[in-house]
Each structure stands twice: as structure tokens, then as C-alpha cells.
Image 1 (cartoon, rainbow, N blue to C red):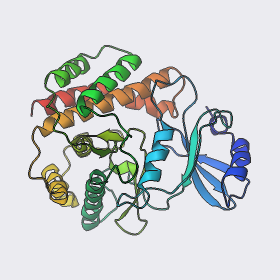
Image 2 (tube, rainbow, N blue to C red):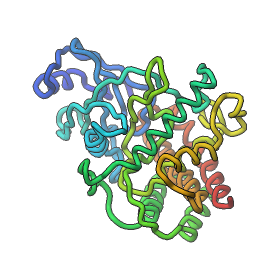
Image 3 (cartoon, rainbow, N blue to C red):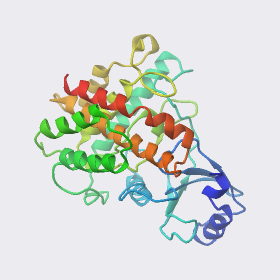
Image 4 (cartoon, one colour):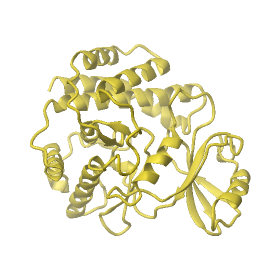
Length: 341
């Protein structure tokens, strides 16, 4: 599907002309290569650049691609210690471009696709990861009542709710029988920790490539891709970072498995966990392997959905979607290993 088919720039211009103060047409658009779930475009206008993020076309799974939630949480976080792009407007009128979308500032900075942070000096690598740690701790310290997000997620056992939700999502997009995925689902149910009462804002897909950093520094300027955010358990976010790092390095895995982190100036898993705990005043985290296993499962379910959309002809980037889909068995087996310690 071409960019022109994915975004009607004439319709966008007509809508923004009446809704966005300071807007000055005409509009051209460049689609970002990322954003498998929700197609994302850089809008070029005479007034400057914006970013438009929309739901994809085609039949969608229930509750998926919630750009409305992305808009709400980022707007609520303005002024907190969690850096986000400035939100301009949300359009829920599907008649404009065929689906809901929102428009936000284009944040100028650097995006790192891989946690190896290629091209940086070791000291800068460590500083970037430390700021990633700082922002994560700040996210989990947000007063959800004060920012109006106390109802952003349902009450009750977050892990039970999430395992149930993603099991349903996985089954709805299943294209082949994967034994390890079946076993992982069974064990996540059987070995689930009791609810410890922690209830914070969580991002749901917290990783280095979902962040924008200063062009000439190591400070995080914005956290992106809030589709999976909710009120939940903070250790799931923390575990998602560690999960990512356990994947193979390179464009496909984008992990740190087998990498000599010390020589690159990158922290160990333990050092990252220690820094997070120190920032939040936590003595220790019990049963952390379960949270890592859950993250492997959830990501496996997500990319299975991406694969299903590719096979159905609805993927934002079909070639990339097929490549990602091949990783579902790896995520399942990795989740089982995390449960085993």
C-alpha cells in the first residue's frame, strides 16, 4: 500500500486548517519506517513539521491500535518528569481520513534503533542508558490521581488481566501451533505471583527505540509509542528492558545477547536494576524472572498480531512484519527460560 493510500494529505490539510491554531498548508507527508502497529507520518507544512499517528486501515482486533489512549496519556504527562511530545489534537471522526488519528509536535533529536548505541563514545552510551533508567523510574513515580489517570486502567491483578488479554489476542491471530507458546501460556497462569498492590502508570513497550534523545547530548526528550500504556505493575516495564537486552544484537533482534557491555560502556542487567531500585527506594525485587517471561510472552503475542495483519494484507510494513513474525517461537522459548531462572 502506498503512502498516498495510507494518508490523504488533502483531507488532513482541510481538517487542520480549521482545527489547529497556527497551521499553514499545504501538507506533504513522509511515513516513518517504524510504527508497525499504528502508521506514523511526519507532516511537512509551511508552519513547521508535525507528526500524525493514525490507526491502520482494515479489520482490527478489539481494543488494539488505541491512538485515543496514546493521545490521552501523553497529554496528561505534560509538565511531569516524564518527557513527551506536545499533543495538539485528537480526531475521532473516521470520515476525515478513514480512522482516528492525533497530531503532535515533531521532536527534533536522535533515535537509537539498537541498545548497542553504535557511534557513541562509551561514556555517552552509559549516560544515555542511565537517562533511560531515570525516565522509567520517573514514570512509575507519577501521581496518577494528580494527572487525571486514576481510571486509565481497570483495578485488580494486573498480571492476571494482562496474561488473559494477550492470550486472547494471541489466539485470535494464531497462524500455526507453537508448542513453546502453549507451554508458556500455561506456566504464566500456574506460576503467577500474588497481587502485591503496586499500581502505577506503565508504558507497556519501554525500550530505547521508543525514545528520542537530544541531538547533541544524552538527555531523553520524548518517550513515544504509548499504545500499550495502562495502569499496572511497574516491574513489567522494568522487565521489558531486560527482555529486550536478552535478544540477539543487530537489526532484527536489537538486543545485547553476547555483547561485551563493559567495553562499550553499557551497564549489566544487575546494574540497571540496582539504579532503578535506588531511584525508587526499593530494597529488592522478588521473582523478577516471571516479569521477564511475561514480557517475552506479550511481545510474542504482539508480533504474532503483526504477522497476521501481514498475511491478511493490512500490515503497515509487510516485509518487516513477516521478518518479525519469524521471532514468535524465539520469544516463547526465551520466556520459558526466564521462568526457569
